[in-house]
Length: 333
Ligand code: AMP
Ligand code: TRP
Image (cartoon, rainbow, N blue to C red; front, top):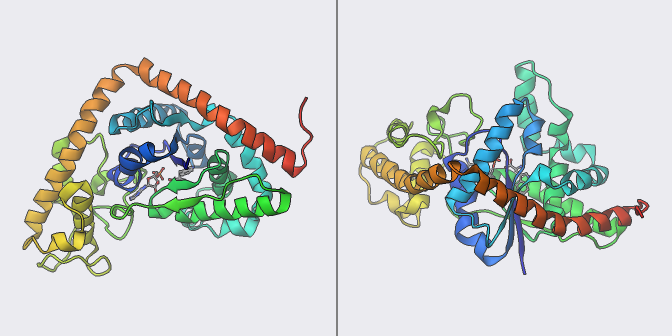
């Protein structure tokens, strides 16, 4: 059976980008077709400046939203990364297999560290080693497929390289994983700056749709989305990124398969925005209703996470033990 693993960081409120780029696929396809594990990767949230209480709150909220979005604990495994020690245990071995140059080449590290340098902030060492931890997340479960948005493809490729290198040097231990991305929605852009991705930790949320946003605010944000000075509706990601983003969102929210074909049925930006807003609202409404019910019963979510961590541990433990033995560590008796 195919094994699928993916994760989401509790660094902010979940966005429509997270939903269309990753979560909707986990819910709709992945959990049913494979042995699927999904994790709130809280250790990753510590790689940037953070408030401990907020990380705790967001971890719980993220797990609750994943269940509200439709992850079914009877068919998949949902857990919090730090509840399963194997991730941190394997991460160190990954740091011993990865090279300094390889980690410094990661686009996300280069972008984030350049931004920090500009504003005079320091960069945590863990931001550099982050992809080693992510590789550990993936390899500890002998994962075949990693469903992620486009921005994470390079990290999954590094996990592949590390698996191949480890197996070659120390003996067959890990499955070599590959990234899988959705057809539409793999890169949802910010509504106010459609050349940048819609990210959950943006300081100004006016271009970001959060899954728990008030529905009237969702409509407003979409109606105010930046388009361009043209008037006809065409799908051109390079020249008309704002309009293309709306078409992508509409297509991914059930407006009908192909964003380029959808463009032909519109002759004004206003109509496109109205329909996109309605389509997004129809996706968010039931999700918000289920979230409200689940949030009222935190004991249930805790139970799901406890059982999930137990299951995850039982899979990861023997794999990580095998890696420890292969690399030359004396087994504990
Ligand atoms: P993160 O928010 O970085 O923890 O990402 C969790 C998942 O959502 C990853 O699979 C990302 O690739 C995906 N994701 C995040 N932002 C976007 C976006 N704007 N468009 C598409 N996918 C995204
Ligand atoms: N780095 C991923 C992101 O920012 C989150 C993540 C951590 C992840 N570990 C993972 C995704 C393992 C897939 C598999 O989105």
